[in-house]
Every structure is written in C-alpha cells, then in structure tokens.
Amino acid sequence: MDQAPPSSTGDMPASKVLSCPGVRQGLFALGVVCVALGTIGLVLPVLPSTVFFLIALWAFSRSSARFHAWLYNHPRLGGPLRQWHSHRVIPLRAKFFALTMMAFSLLLVTLYIAEDWVLPSALGAILAIVATYIVTRPHRIVAVETNY
Image (cartoon, rainbow, N blue to C red; front, side, top):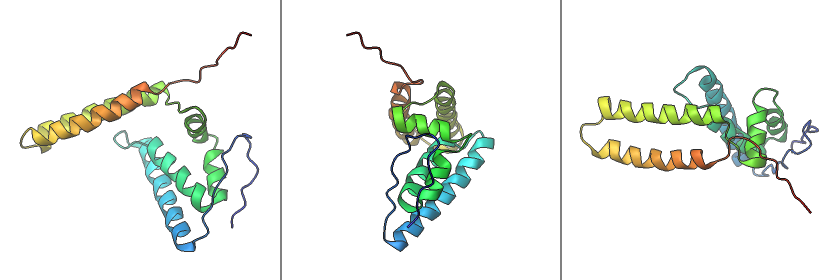
C-alpha cells in the first residue's frame, strides 16, 4: 500500500486506499484521466477543470496516497481543492465561469442541436438545479466570531 507523504497543509484528509488491486488500478486510471481532462480544461474555456480535479482527488484517495497528497498539496491546484474539502467554498470567479458556460451550452443546444422544445427544456431544468447548487455555495471562507 502507498504511504502518504507528510502534508504541508496539516489538514489533509486521510487517504483510504482500497486493498482490491483491480478496483485500485481502475480508480487510479480514472484519477489520471481526470487530471488530464482538468489540465485540458485549464486552457479550453468550454471544459470545466475543477470538477475533474475533484473527481481525481477522490479517485486518488482510494487508489494512491502519494498521488492524493500530490494533488491535494499542489501549489496551483491544491488551494481550491482544499477550500472545497474544508469549507465547501466555490470561488466567485469559478461560479461566474460555470454559470456562463452553462448558459452558453444551453444556448448552443437550443439554437443548433435541438429540433423541438424537449431537449432544451430538460437540459434547462437540469442546469437550473446545478446553477442553484453553485450559487448557494459560499464563495469565500467566512470567519465566525463568538462573543462569550
């Protein structure tokens, strides 16, 4: 089994690497594919990146403590992943980008793909639920003061 290197943040979640080699290898492959897609998403505006890095972080947590620690403590990618893990925070810029891309996708489907109202309506309903979830998450960590 992989041993996790020391965490530079001190609050890294425990990695629960599975013992079944086939499942572990499959999850590791999923993590690698998601890191690749997330990296592509950093340069292509139509592909989200954070969701792929979150999936990769989960897959690595079950398959490789070393890669889990690498992604969690990554100098550029680790910050948003740690914020999501600790506080369920979605940065304001990421919210704006996600909502813009969802609206753009719905517009493209409506104008160029759909032949009737069913597909845009179904997609619109799903995207409305996702958008509501995104908008209702905090966009920064709020310190709570206690007065005793």
